[in-house]
Image (cartoon, rainbow, N blue to C red):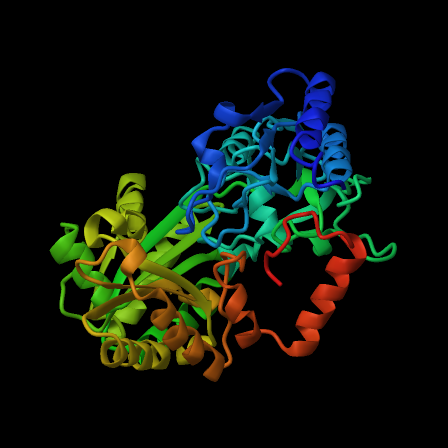
Length: 470
């Protein structure tokens, strides 16, 4: 494209696109909302050349055609709750926001599926399933803000992976728009369908780099009729592993969550955040166990008997058992208060890593020591979905603003240990731009080369979300 005409030609093409899609569909200049300039990552906001808000896949395709004519890179956006920069634009890019592609198209009770538009908030889907007497198990702290398309794009994890699996296990069909504008629709409802390649898995977890998801067929499950929860204190990590084994064997398919909090986390939430501990303090580790079933008259006594057996074995040093929905929510609030760490701790850096369950405590000990020795004044806390092999940690140097936090040094220490221990630099949040440098710590050269081959095949011009992941 002629450099002399480049500044005007894109705006002319975007104006033509606005005539096709409607006056509310294309925002430029001062009309661009600040929210579309970044996601929840710590990267600096960047203003795109335009924000386009289509209503359907055809509108997405039209937008892509316009971007390709103007040779403008484009990035899809959903609820913008990502933490790795995957949905963040750069100057001169076009944002394709799915915020108006909202709605539940169908709930099919016979097939136990729900067909939804990709911009639909997760909480809306959860409530619709509940009202239909069914259950959609994906659950994240950002449920009210995150969009299902983004959940798929990052293969979100959340609180119930131990029972239902990651997001990709909850999807049967997709409609997706490819980087050349082609619309591929396979809104499959069949649980068993081996007719050729299962193409949906190309797009689930690819962080909007291979295509833009526009509609989804989700799997639904029987609605839980009972929920039991216990907050337990144990002596050490060996006891955590024993408890996990006992939960898997004693609760079986009822086990829906197994969350572990180290003493550093417990000290922060009780001493600094003012959380009233449901159990005694000063223990080795704290575990939140949740079980969900279909018959409270049977499930609750079974859960209590299981706990009593553990107390008799002296595996548990202390335990609080929920007696109501409100108490269960209070137990979860203890675990979910990490979402308020910005107010509690001030500026900090968050990490999401995957490790073999047996080596979690070894990692915590080595990591805490390495951060303390390697970075003056560095503190850290550790917690996570340990039953799923997913550890979260937060590290910071008190008194420093976020832009002066020694993130590079922290990254090198933490991800170096992850590599040495055969883990993953991202368990559930994705790679985006924030972890791109460290992808090789978790994936082989051959794997990364294959990722690049797929990207080049689908997006040879590298206009769809370029520079992300690989």
